[in-house]
Structure formats: C-alpha cells, structure tokens
Length: 289
Image (cartoon, rainbow, N blue to C red):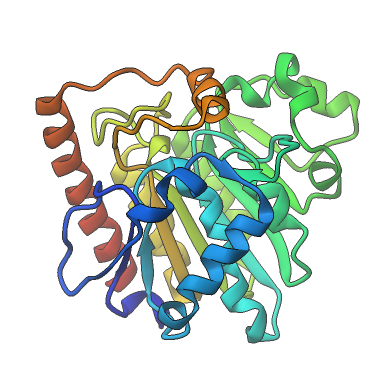
C-alpha cells in the first residue's frame, strides 16, 4: 500500500522536521510563487518540475504550511491512472471550497479537486470555521455541495441556510465523537480507494499549535478515523506546519493579511514545529499499523 512507502517532504518553507526514512525536495525557490495561491499555470509548472519525484509514488507527502494545501490537486493527478473512482477524505478546520477568482489557493482547492472526473466524492471532516455558516454562504461553491460530491462534516456549526437551498448531504454534530461515528457508518460499505489529505489546523491546540484558527479534534480521534480507513488508503498528504514568511507581492500580503495570522516568537516556532513532528509520526504510525 502506497502510504507505507518512505515519506516525501516537499520543502517549500523548512517547517517539516526530518522523519524516519524521508526524502526531501528543496523547493524554496517556489515559495513566493506558490504559497497561499497562484495561477493554475503556475501550479502546473510546479507539477512538471516534480513529475520525476512523484512518478515513484511516494506514500505520505508532507508539504509544510497549510498555505500549500492547494498542491494536493497536483498529488491527486497521480491517481487518474487507477482507472477507478477515488474517495478523497480531508481533515480540515475549513471547507477549502471557497471562491477564488485569481486561480487556485489553499482555501479553494477542494472545488478544483471536485471537478476531476475520477474523484467520486470529497468529505471534509472536522470543520469548526464559520466559513460554512450563513454569513459566508455565498463564498462557498454550492453546486458540488448540492450534488453531494463535496460534503462538510462540521462540529458546532449552524447549517440551516444550506437546507433552504436543498443542500442535504452536509451535517454538523455536537462533538467530534458523534461526527466520527456517523462518518464511520456512512463509509463502512464503501470500497473505492481513499486519498487522505490532512491539514493539522483541524486539531485542538492541546495537540499541536498552528497559526490558523484551529478546530477541536484530538489526535487520538484523527488516528481512529484513519485506522478505520487504512485498508483503502492509497495515498496521503499532510499540511498545517507552522512557518513564517513575508511575501514580496503586495497583493499576497494583503490577501493573507485578511486571515489575521499572528506573529510567532522564535522560541514558540521551534517548540511548535517539534509538536508537529510528533503529530506527523503519529499519522505515519496510524497509516502503517
């Protein structure tokens, strides 16, 4: 199974600490162009550059900050050759199905992925962000939600506005435990291969600090869900590391500034990155058991 292969680190921002048996590709020269968002042509150019490494089908790919989550679309393309529908399961505190008119970015990649003909369904687990509530409803792509091709699995969010629009597949729960039970029941009879994408901002700060607004899922709860899916998982990626970067582009500085990410002291940065290494090892262990 692919995730048992040695992990690959796409090193855009030097935030992923070394992992046992890992290979690392230095990508600092791409940081300004790709981070947060980019034109689709720029993402394809990165894909062309990475093609020789990705053809070896690495197991789990670590990409650093959640600002690179849209690189998942490149990684998904490898599974077109499976010739089977692919079930994409995402752990994320945000829906990543938002409108973005300037290409693709870390908050819009799910919409792009849902348009891939071999992707049967995308389930986004652990959302506590208000991005899914009525005040931000217009920012979400709705067609894939209405069809059920994309499904939000939320904790403590009001999705009443979706019902008025006929969106019935997305759900909100009182706790992560209830969410995990319902998702497990819904997934039990499925047989499609699974691609797993993890943004660690879904986790409680008791397990790992990020510089995005965070969810409430505990690492043990994530491991349990992964364990239930493990036999179907053919590939995975992990983002959500903590890193600091100042954009050269005023436009990117403006857009990323709207997210309100706080400054991080150097001592905190080192300690938090060490936390993330422990979480990364736990994810690898959950996949390899």
